Image (cartoon, rainbow, N blue to C red):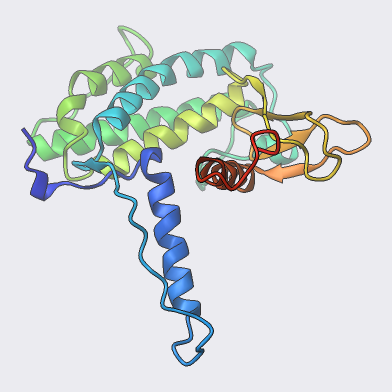
Length: 248
């Protein structure tokens, strides 16, 4: 069992509201003028974080799932690739390198994914003082076998000294490959009215950074974080009886 004294706030999305509340408090504290009699010193938020070591149980499960799904995402990306490099934003690399690019953007992305996974395998092998693998890819693809190896040792990797960086990078690559492969993206209707046209036509496509109004005469784009903050504000006001159900 993990010693509770050694636990910290999990770096995952489970603590998004906790981090936002403390960032807002730090900003309010910086803006506070003790000489202004009209204001009072801001109070720290009473929201408690989900603890982790460094990840909480829910985020550990998510990292395990996303690591496994990277194999499918790599296959989907290669299956939908046309063998030609795009232009503009389509030709951006997952992470910048100085190596020459191949004619296929998908091929470069797969090569960088393989390099990232091998890097984490090597990091854990170094931690355990295990020898590096001479070669990989003769039994299955390098991505598949590397993911399988990392999954086998994931319970130890996810609590290793580099566990936070490992989990953060796996989640980041999963998001990027999901977007590149256009996989698992749903368009969901959002319940609030558009602040501009007041119509109930707001939608959000998974992976996008904005909520969009479907009214062709409006087309308002609202930052996702701004929309979620408004939902939270209205939910709190409704629970306190400060907002009518119809308005909320």
